Length: 113
Length: 117
Image (cartoon, rainbow over the protein chains, first blue to last red):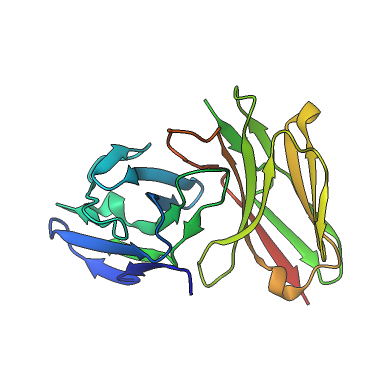
């Protein structure tokens, strides 16, 4: 089954404790991206990757890092989480050519105390 | 810059009513793509439709229909004979042309649809 898998799905952590949200897709997609969803703001892009070792900032990259060492994986790293990073996070992927839609993971709800 | 406006924050209807969700967009691109996604209470994002800017044909899929009008920069979504299972947040989104660039979706803020029995 074609899917984008995120882990963890739910996490409560404390300020300053480094965490990583993993994202893996099994569709051999070149493009992957991270979004965060906040009430009243919709979804906003954090980072994206056009292919292995090619990443770039989206609209709200502050406080986040990413890496793309393998085509299937695109982890989101919060080096020193803060309460304003409490949000619902979505990973997404799509093939690198053509007008196709983004496939989204199921979301990871993160709470930073 | 691209922008998507969903003016309706919340809509509440009674089952079997028809309901239209509005979406207005802004872009300077001549080629672009419009999307609708559904987010049920369980939280995942479900793709509903993609429409290309050069294809203004309206589309119907079961109880769902979409009205794309470039003249008014609108891409409205109608649910006919709504059902309780249609209760969700619906997002309209816009993307620029393909080819070597970020395939970023610009999302509206979403419309919460509640269908009451």
